[in-house]
Image (cartoon, rainbow, N blue to C red):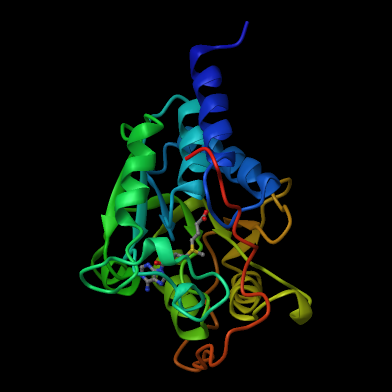
Length: 251
Ligand SMILES: C[S@@+](CC[C@H](N)C(=O)[O-])C[C@H]1O[C@@H](n2cnc3c(N)ncnc32)[C@H](O)[C@@H]1O
């Protein structure tokens, strides 16, 4: 017989799949599995960088619920959108522009979605710039999912700032890892390579899906990503910076 936790997790996954966002379904299922492992590990809470409208958030919440919800997910975003979400860029959604400030603001829709889906007992929103929060964060994490800005400076800052917060035995997931440059931008792939080259991480088997990669901490090594890491920001809208936005009719 299916447990109440499993049934609720399946419902959260169904709701995640019906939520607008940038993850492919196979990537979402993999995130759910990795989150379940992290929740069971007892190593600490989970954290994602890049909440947007809650798609990845709900997949991660499904994994936490499935494993018994012994911890929570911190879902971090400044909610003003990445470079490629601003006006004139491929992923811009004009319905997310705040009429008063003229800035993009995805927070109201993210919060409504998490509450409507009944996930607010396992999800805590963290509002602000990732690099500032990372610099002030002290709690060891069982899992970090990096899916924030994909310009070189922001991606490397997220990788450097958050990968060191993962407890030994914890997991690091990176979205938009494209080995072939014609498929998308380089920074997530370069951070993924640095994580492996540094000896701090190995591939966690069974989680790779489309452009999602999940790594396991080894407790050894040091990042090569010092002050010499790439500094170039995205200058023009790229053809593909990330997976295409999945637009949901049922939110
Ligand atoms: C690619 S979207 C996240 C997509 C989401 N994970 C999903 O499943 O649909 C990137 C998000 O990162 C946020 N972001 C970009 N740079 C950031 C930064 N420096 N600090 C906090 N959030 C940031 C943007 O506001 C945007 O909502």
